[in-house]
Image (cartoon, rainbow, N blue to C red):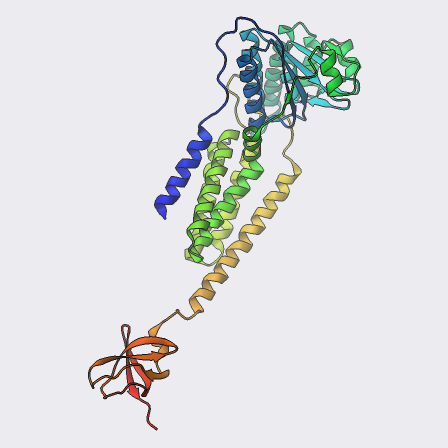
Length: 438
């Protein structure tokens, strides 16, 4: 069973580690046409994977233009910088990257603003908004909040300024998105030259047509791979899966089944993959593992303290995932562009309660198993009566039916087939019997 568990972990980690994104085209004799992609989601590792695949596919198709239809509330800085890097790589290849904020009512906030400003061109539809790009930096040492926060905001403002100036737009206006959290409706964004233009359409199809994209061009959306990366890299999901995997393996101690154990190991592997993709702090992951170890220890101690300690350590590690967001690959500070979601705090409370309840449940199962008589325990047959299935000579052995089962029996008496006998002693799996008088 241990070997199977290890093989499952290795297979899962290998499967997730092997990247299947299309290979970038080295060169194209001619570049023409459009490649369209649409993202209406948070900026996370799944979104970064999707844009990387989009750029690679566009280069493989020798597409001269990528139109990226974007609507987002923001996300983490590491994924944002990865997406900006993909855009810059496409631009260096010679492609023209266009961000389209659509349909009517769409918005591009926070990390999405940096992605848009890294584009060659930005177009918006009436009723859309862009901006509000102030980072949320956690884990600042006590007493250094003002100084560190100012430095971090200045770093992101400088980054935004560089992205905007590269494409000839108004860097003064975009810097205010970072330093003051300013957002620009479509008309003000055009007036202040935060974007290149406003397309008088209310639909994505209409805007694409105005940009010159043929009606036959498909609009690509995140596939299964990118969607799964987004799901599993969500710290809430990964942490919950990790805990579920721990309890699946723990439950297997009481209900031995290779399926339950294999599922638990697989779920833990997927959770660790998700935390790794998100770039969770090694300290946070270590604390979660230590917490799980204390929960396992409860099986031995059975006094509840180990489970409670495990819950506290696990939740501390979970909370640190948000306190120390993934660092970028460049010079930018680690930051998120949205506050810790309320669901996270609810999940923290729920996890704690679930662990305690599950620990008590497992403890009750263990107590019940201890009290349950063992199946086919020969000593439990002392005093039971049955009938001889064969004859035996005194001091010899024969076969008797006791408790509806055949047993090897020994007796100091001569016994005939059919005689009624009573069990008076047990030696190993052999019963000592005597004839029932009368």
